[in-house]
Length: 97
Image (cartoon, rainbow, N blue to C red):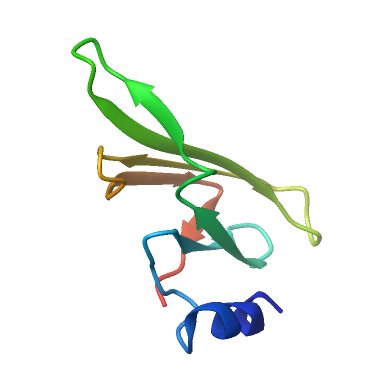
């Protein structure tokens, strides 16, 4: 269902990145359930300010599926231009499409 919506909104590729956001595709390590989440860079990222007044962004997401109760933790760090700098996942794996 999300892929059909993505095709209507962004064209053929569901992993398309735009200035508004990107798709976060992950798989549960326990049951294999796949999650395709759209991350809106304007509303889903948290601002972080350093002591010199600079700004970076971060995302902390917890995902739980319908097949099992395995809690997947995703943490991502972005620079001031909202470009991905690092990412980490627990209890799951990132899917590259």
